[in-house]
Length: 421
Image (cartoon, rainbow, N blue to C red; front, side, top):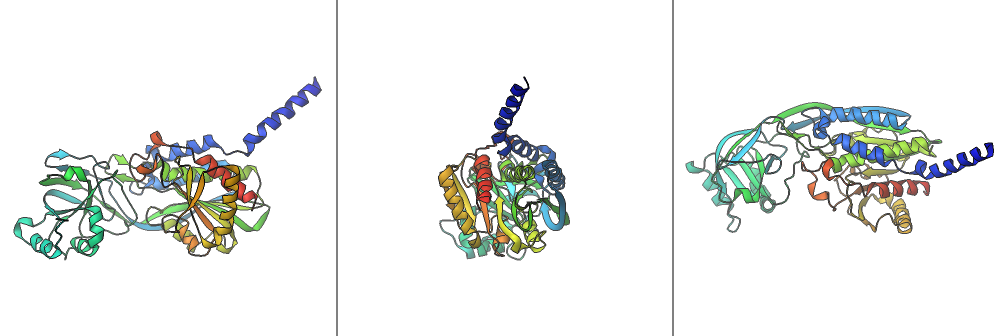
């Protein structure tokens, strides 16, 4: 009987080994669901969702078994819209977030306004400014297709200025799912810029609007930094993901950000758990950044005040928006990071994690950028297509449409590339 029990125990141990070495999919899903819930109100600033989320992530790193977890505070100036967000066109009420949003640098606006439509087929900037100076167009809202404004950005910057023209603000029409942003919310411009779905403006005569903004100077938020000690401390691998998102637009609407970027945060928490259970050769550092949506403020601050010497970083993995199902994985890689990327491509060809690793142009679109500028070997993993991608920066990026297909191959590609480095 004793021999039989020993054999049974041995068999159980061997059966359990694959699961011990695998990613923790249940934890990953739990973190995505938690961070995208109403509890954190879109992980924004007006209702302190970002502060609550930072504390949650701190606890998750502790539970994962990290040897050290600290908060790195910094401040930002940020414009928010937590109050009234009401708009109607010729008496038809619009839905905040679906039908209209404010650009992040807009002041509040209240009242009933006439509309002045830009003639894009016969564009004449001189005529536009003369028209807007006429009494019948005083305090009108200027309406134009968003993409057209790029061709004449100088004119439209004037129309946003108090000295440029007596218009009350601008409406830019938009054709795809309505997007909301925070990138340039560190200031408030003279006049509001409102994005409205194009079809709603057809034949419109006037709008009624009441949107309140609240500017928050010197708002304190934090990066969350965790460490799993390795056998050696002279070098380290770093895993990053931003946890902030877009917060609120109006009193009821929040942007859940399940894909962007609860998915990335959940991934680095499970990576911390994995390395806590499998002691690595080198130290592993995990950083959940705040302020990414506000123009990479958290990662820039960390790069200027790093918890580890930047030259000691063997490789930095930045994970952003991996909650999708695209079989082709988009990557951006710094020049010093190309060597390991070539190894990753070889591993991927062997293991068939993705159909392809697609190398894009290095850009300031996520938190790898401040490190790439400083010569750190780094890579961005991000999905740029798939079933959930069209909903990024919308209120529909939520738990109900969450997809988990990409998580496991990303996890395996990272851990295997480190093992073989």
